[in-house]
Image (cartoon, rainbow, N blue to C red):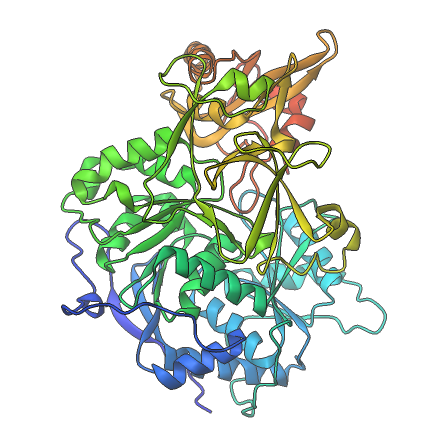
Length: 613
């Protein structure tokens, strides 16, 4: 076998004004054909299928932080995955083994992922070390996950190999298990013998990804090939994907929206994906939009905060000459979708070719592979203005004809995908009528295979075949509307308040960092109800300026949500804790509210220790 991976270095690309188009995306005038899922049952079969039928077609483009552009064709991907698979087998990895992958977005990640598939091993995805958690905490999480999985090894980004090896020094393997190896892709033996991929079934586990949990109780979500292909096919069907499509992705690949919605769903349809590291977007959000122009991308996923960040952070000079007219599907998912964000993004970027009909509000979760509902292009983007008080007291979605203090605007996230059933139930598990808020229950072809070796956690969410999501919503004319999470509800004086509208209102205040606001309910023993506390990050440090900012936050929250917070806690950047997928840890903040009060910029000096979480 060749000792070198096959990758096409196509020079550099600066994703900014004047970038033009990638040569391979200058599509000739022809009618596109409908994209369908490869006629196979497993990911390993899909790798072989595309290499045999379209060996020269680019499947993945990588634009790294150093502006280097790399292309992987279907033939290259198969060659490199086979090569790495042979090396994994030389290390003792066999069918059914679990291999942990910890990479930034790179060719090495996807080659390793598909190498595991070809060997019949299960790739298990974890995050890289980051500034959000201490090295010690990351090492402990790694050891816990390796032990839970009984992993055969870990493949990791070269920059973090030393940390992984250090974490394994005190690793105690279970009886009958070998200690896992830690290696980079370059460490693997490239002279290994070729092999024939073993036969895998549709019910075998395609991959395991972890929910954001505590160190001592990680939950590994098992996704079968059957569930994966069913979900990907349903997403492509409702999205009307065709042969000319291309996906752009900056989301982390160890989570469902980056790995499945943006990458694997495109891959099984034979549609290319252009990838860049998450930090590339966070450092300069305009790179995302320029990537869409450069690759003539038709689809891209992002959480609400990403669209909000584009509105707040991108300067006019950064998008001079930008053309977003190719962007047919702007998926907004993974967190509560704010109507204001949708409107503001549209207003800001419509002059650059962004079409309002491109919006695809969506809802999903990893326990259903990724997708649950998506807006169909044949139906308009649907906004509903509701009575906030009726939702809070009666849990009914009562329409209002005008805006005012009682008005709350929500977006439909479309209809559920083919193969998925939905129920909305009350606290006693009784199904509620349309336009009544309740917990969302799901079942169907996309349902996960349980949490790995955690029957208790599985049984807590899977009951009588239905997945209890913990999300609250209502149905109206067959369309789904999301209200929030049951565990995040703030109950004040008998009324239910969702934190998202408060957080969105607070984020509008100048000086408050977008996506870094948390509204939580904290028990007040004197009043017998919950206080509403808003924690918000700011770069301001002068006490007088910070006090004025807090007053503005209080007033904006009142105007935006109809309820006044009991107190506002201003904190410095990178203090509000988030999961590895970027979701705010409201429960953690609620449980540790005194620690955040001690970190307030109004009582502590700017240079202080952040909370370790």
